[in-house]
Amino acid sequence: MQVESRLEDLILKLFDIEGVKFGDFKLKSGIQSPAYFDLRVIVSYPKLMREVSQVLWETAKNAQKFVSICGVPYTALPIASVMSVDNDVPMLIRRREAKDYGTKKMIEGKYEKGDVCLVVEDVVTSGSSVYETVELLNEYGLQVKDAVVLLEREQGGTERLKRDGVNLHSVITMTQLVSVLKKNGKIDETMYSRVLKFVAGNRFDNPTIPSVGSGDTPAKKAKSEMTYKERANLCKNSVSKQLLEIMEQKQSNLAVSADHTSASDILQLVDQVGSKVCIVKTHADIIDDFSDTFVHKLQELAKKHNFLIFEDRKFGDIGNTVLHQYKGGIHKIADWADIVNAHTVPGAGVVTGLKQVGGDKNKACLLVAEMSSSGSLAKGDYTRATVEIAKENSDFVIGFICQNKLMDDPVFIHMTPGVKLKSGTDSLGQQYITPKDAVFVNKSDLIIVGRGITAASDPVAEAELYRKAGYDAYLERLA
Image 1 (cartoon, rainbow, N blue to C red):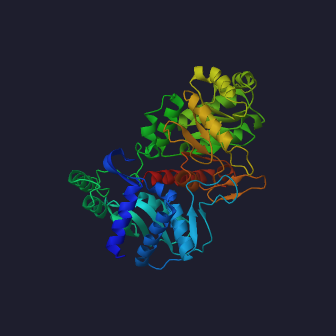
Image 2 (image 1 turned 60 degrees about the horizontal axis):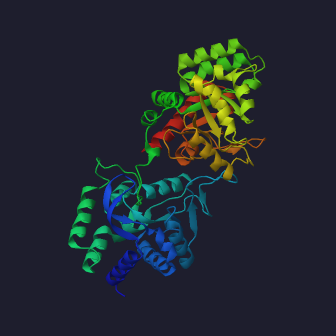
Image 3 (image 1 turned 135 degrees about the vertical axis):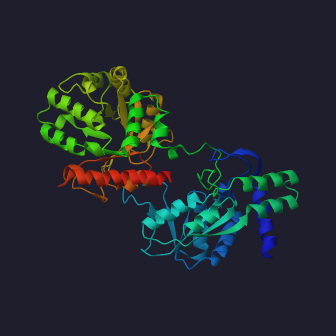
């Protein structure tokens, strides 16, 4: 079969399985489109998936020599798998989120630094999803010179990737697709013209059009791309609003864990690094000389340097008990801490108890959804249940202690502990990830750093390194 006839046959097959639809669809960017592509359906048609894989492989012959391939998650993964098996070429898998156990790698498979990898995608609009995969592969020492795609929507993706040093090779363009469908009576002249007009008027290399993703997804603009300030404007809880505003004003998403056992050592550290951080986190029950005087001085430093105080109490008992632990005792946490946190092992009652005290005092709570320690049981069903409890108590619960982004709702804040400039572990099972892994890769909002700063010979200089690394990763994610 000639190439032109083969592509025409392939386009008609994609139309028949409803991989391409026409009408009125709201895309991920919020734009109304006359065409919608859902190529995930290909996995239910093995013969067609093999055919798609074959034409992509033939198109890849135009690429520079490569030693492995990597499919953009998730639709391109099965296509890349077939390409790998049929042509005996190694495949790499890019994860969307890191595992909370094992190596925690974002790229799986066997490779050597310097290897050239071909990226495989199903649909390209702006090219951003391809570039995210390219960037991650680059971080792991791989080179990407080319990418292949089944359908190029001709909305600026090829040009954008070219500027980033990646040559995009497409099997089908939007113009080819609608021309074939009109020729075969699948769409009429009016729809044909609508689609081409839409493509011409919605190119992502036009600075007035937002670049928010390459695949078609009927959804609102990705909320994770909002700035801290934009998110602050959506918050109803005064603490979360204030925190996001501080992060924007100070250009810092750094929380320092001031884990000294002496009140004077804590106050000295906080005064030194206070200008670099948006939160100071304490463990009141390890302070040997805890007192009301210490609390008063800490609050004065919070006003001086504009940060919030987070007492890492990790409440984990029944509602009535945590109510008294939060309100009274030696520490009287509710009187001075802007934020506290809790495990959800007891169920929603732990939040109810804390809210009875903190709600009237305009305080806020974080839920421990995931932990950075090796072998943590805070995962799976526990994490999912924790997210549901947060949703039901969004007036008091402002976010999570976690390793990965758990929700798209912009009013919830994700904070990641166990962050160091270099990844690794300690002798007690603590696992460390870098600021970029936490903020850019895992989509967290805020990094929590303890010994990386407190044990440094120059805490101020070290805090600045963490502040810059964390905030740069946030800016890179926005870009």
